[in-house]
Amino acid sequence: MYAVERRQQILAIARRDGRVAVNDLAGSFLVAPETVRRDLADLAKQGLVNRVHGGALPADRIGFEGTVSSRSARNQPEKTRIAARARAEIRDAEVIFLDEGSTAVMVALTLDPERPLTVVTGSIPVVTVLNAHPRISLILLGGPVRSGSLAAAGALPAGMLSEFAIDVAFLGANGVTARHGLSCPDLAVATVKTAAVAASRRRVLLADATKFGHDAFARFARVTDMDLIVTETSAPGGVVEAIRKQGVQVVLT
Image (cartoon, rainbow, N blue to C red; front, top):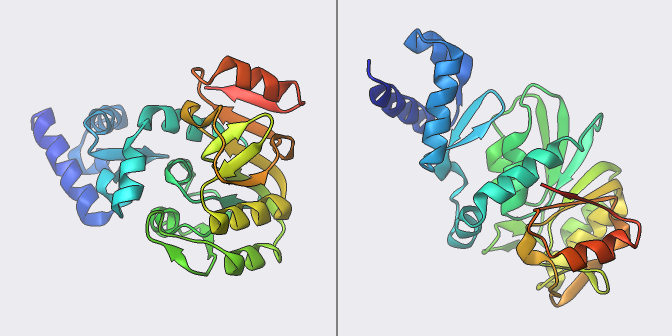
């Protein structure tokens, strides 16, 4: 079988089953796992699959709605690097919070399906990515769902969060400045983010370079509320340095 034929079959299996595993494919096609990994890498470069630990998911699995899928497509290599670095911050955590947004979906895609973990989220796209992982327990926050992000927002999910003790929260933001802090355009979304900050022992902000140096309408946290900020090497140096001067660790990927 030619490589192109094998890759076409791999893509068909991924779309049929919702996920493919390297070892299973190697056994089915009687090839080495390294060959399958190269196949998946090629399919990922074409934007047809998203690599996850031990395998891949079809790319259209996270294309739920116009706004969500369009954000997922923007800055994808950068967000993938940020998400991969974020995964290292889980450490020995038992419970994590994943915010709404495309970077949170990327983090979900990096999680090890064999590692026991409880994930709290208001994001339907995050739940859809993780629901096939038998060792990952999901808690979906309830409340009014925003059509753009397909995530619950407002007082109801924030109230649920106030009852939890979360080890690590992975948060996103639309604006990041040393002076105004972390912000987003929607008050209902900010309410959930603020509750997640309050409920978590450790807070990690995941933001690509485009978010730095801008303030959105509703502030949900100060930069000093974060234990770590993960962003790109292209983030504005002046803003990054001003944040570091406040004692916050900033990692550039």
